Image (cartoon, rainbow, N blue to C red):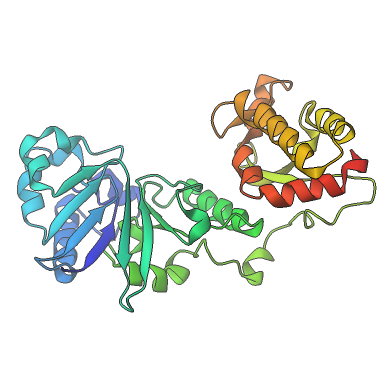
Length: 321
């Protein structure tokens, strides 16, 4: 079996992407020719490449089959939002596979096996993130969203929600496919490794104090949300959300054992941060519509991924409720 490579956001035939990404090409013809050259300089006939979306722009739909044949090896496409060339039956047939998402095992050069989750889009709560799996994605190019993704994944790591995520968009990798070994080794310099929490990186941010270090009269459990107005990641205390604190306090008075309390606490979390809201998203209903954009929060899974610690903390501090 040959090598396995990864890339994404190639945008063959897309003239505007040259300016959008500040790509080092003068014309779309030059870009397409160079993308093919760099691909074939690394990928052999017996290799397999996963393209994580946005492979061919609509301008090249008609000659997509020939373009694909010019690329070495087999290609599996993880569909993106700009892959309309798939309407071309011959282009579709030229691919080894087409998927919305994939969950694969990749062997590194040293023989270590890694579970790798593939999608076009950044997915912080990907399958296996707590168990050493790696997530590869594309889509965000050189945008503010790409920076938000890095910050958000780093901060999830800082509260114990482990993840290791890499953007394999071709613009980050010299416009050529890369192996998982290359991604892990060079990702720390090309794009900060989300799975690594360095003191130097964390020192850049005005962090709230550790969850367990609070004033004696205060109970606090911070989660993160994207403030669309300031375009930054900020914190918010779940115990300040609506009547959540009041109902947790009632449960603490009612139940004498931590086990029984934990069952009721889970029900309250699911009610306030799941069943009343869109999946993974909470928009607080008691503030004005203009302000509501500030409170889009991936709350439920931030709590659930630290569930045992959250229960222990809440139970130990129940008198502060």
